[in-house]
Image 1 (cartoon, protein in one colour):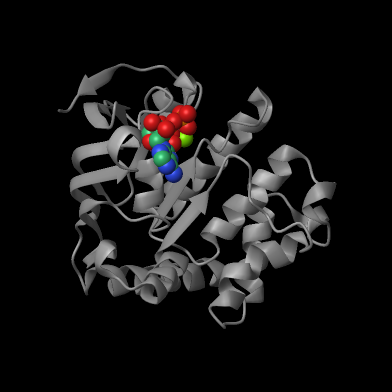
Image 2: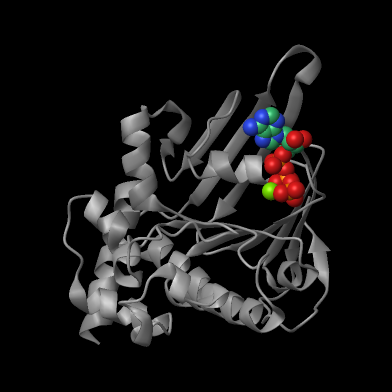
Length: 265
Ligand SMILES: Nc1ncnc2c1ncn2[C@@H]1O[C@H](COP(=O)(O)OP(=O)(O)OP(=O)(O)O)[C@@H](O)[C@H]1O
Ligand SMILES: [Mg+2]
């Protein structure tokens, strides 16, 4: 009970830092986003005038063919790349206007990133990998909250292991934990199950959904897996750098269900 209370206090603090007191609003608002790579003959317009917004607590899947701009979009939303033009508002902050240093701090505190290939630090143990974002922020991990997270991730028996001593599913659970350790408002995942078998895929999806439900964690997940897209509350389709569909699903579903969708825009 005490852990849950502490956890919610941190969440409320983080949200207030983002939105100001009392307000509930879009966690993410993207306006007229463009991204151009290269120039002349090698110019690629990877994102073309992309605009949409996401409310706090939504579980959104982004789908689309290879090369359509999904990872480009995710990198910009996650503050690891900058757009050529446009705005990315996370809470009330336009992250495109932040300096490199401020962006790095903002990212660490408010955005959790999960990749297909885990990106764990090979020489650090599971526990060290998990707490890295806190240590980088020059803070001390709260032992109680850390143990609670480790238990939720099912990693109790592995905290002193190195990443190469873990299965793919376990490594991905560590990377989810690392993304969540600072209780970010926004969790972004680029093909998080792309490297996993169907059993581990189910486990990871259940875990993401659990954090989404219990902590109102907003989740945006890029996927090629139709079942994952069907399990999301909303599916945004991107083709050739543009949003071509935006479907809100009628009801929140579990990973195995296949309910109908309703076209939103
Ligand atoms: N650093 C880069 N320099 C130049 N072009 C790039 C760069 N990164 C991506 N692109 C191009 O931008 C377009 C979008 O790429 P992106 O990686 O966003 O696609 P994606 O939808 O994530 O594809 P996939 O499903 O294969 O991961 C592609 O045409 C790609 O070749
Ligand atoms: Mg990609």
